[in-house]
Length: 389
Image (cartoon, rainbow, N blue to C red; front, side, top):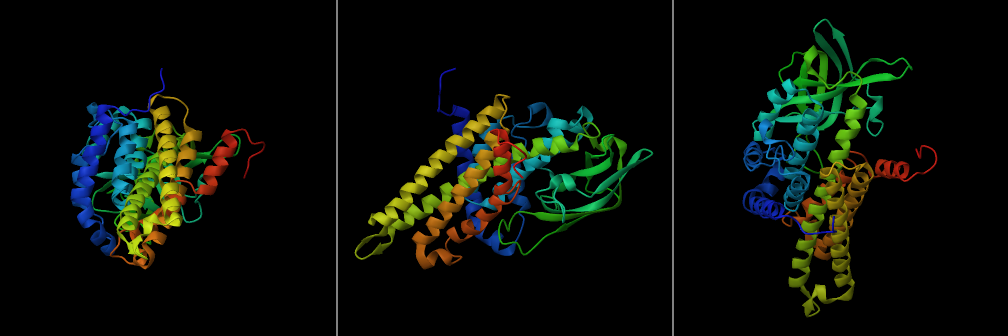
């Protein structure tokens, strides 16, 4: 196959459609929603109607089946305007819909995917715990099979889309027993929002993604049917790793889109802000900042799109997903930092959107595997001796 960097007509149409929606529907509300820490049901439903949930799911399950590259382009365009709405879609797809589509049985897919893909409800992935963050395999939440039900006890924290009016279910990784080699058996369970013993609580006072919903989950003798096991018993750790691989691509897209938005704000401001009788962009020290931003965004886009192409063509992509997540998140850091500097004192004021971008960026270096964890993953993939941890 010849090397080709052109996007398809459908992918270009996706970019234009999502950019138009983000600029017309999201941009006018983004600052207010951020200030109020308010999750928008209305915007989320509209994004569902636009086909932005279930992007990689076949139409027979209610998905738009636009493919992984188009999905990542959509997240990128949302993040160019607002990280919170991009986070809702990224988590809704990669962490909510993804595990059910890739690991669920036919009954589970038919029961949940049509509602999730249409934007009627959202699902979340319950992985992180108060004492199990980067070391996700050390989860303490337990599920015991008693007759025809699983009984779940434990808690989760920092879970996106887990405690809002649209939350319909959470996928929970839990210890379901012990293996013959003495290691803990981890499995994933589908927990409906109305399951007895399950409570979701919204988390407030966040620095970033303030219009995205983040929740704490509590399971106190929570009952779910035996049939709510996702995939095979004991496959939970593998399912988690696979889910995070896909999630890293969407976080990379948020970094890329956020960097693009910051660059455009910085360029516009620097071209119109006059000091010493000329635009500040004409000073070499500032022109070089803008040149560096454009350079890194171009490199980030090529890396991320290659990783997505690998996934779309069913090729190994774990190393490239970690690389893209790491690089795109850190590129956004450098871009927002330059952009605030170019704005000067105005960049520190809420009336300028770059202030929100500066805050939103930080989570990209922490969520779905910290930058440090990504470097460990990459080190292992390139053959570094030992465990590199």
